[in-house]
Image (cartoon, rainbow, N blue to C red):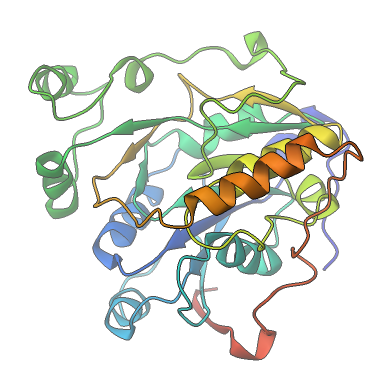
Length: 299
């Protein structure tokens, strides 16, 4: 696919952004995310749902919804073989048409300026590590059943939620730190890596061959991606006080593979050859294209 190349950050306002939303068996949360995207101040984006093998009732709840989405929307699904977030995100990226990618989890509800702020932070040879605000189970239930008020229009509501312990922080919902003051970080730092809210140029993602699908189960495929981006010469920009999403409560996924994945990652960190390509990546997927089902929900 031929993509326009943004040669200068000043042209970023014209580029198409692809939001790749990871989901699995949580259609209610996903529909809440999609509804929030309808309210964006910057609508120059498309959405690719990267479905990690959801059961058919959840797939149907999204694909059969009678709604005219104000953005291009497609749903890509591959068979359920366990937690394969890296493979699902790569699947979404293969279908994306944008010059710039934003990876978002299907339980992370964006504020109205989410796309606008990511676009403002997009710099040449950089990637953006987004931020999140954790909601508890009760506030999550409210968010899914009815939309929550915008923080800036109803700060009292959010102060009350924080006081009652229903969210873990507030400043990022109100403050906006200027993009021009962001520091580029060239050295790897494990702390705060968030693949649930992560932006980068497609060119950079393709160059390192995407997420590494060699990571099975939960854990550390996001840290691996960041390490390889640094090794390929890209710098990190932290998106706190700019790109916050409301991370809906959910039961913790099984972490039975975490130790094996950590060992894989630590081995890569200690490697002296500074390799930045994925072992099993964007161009060498585990799932054959014939097993992927794709539906256009909004042209």
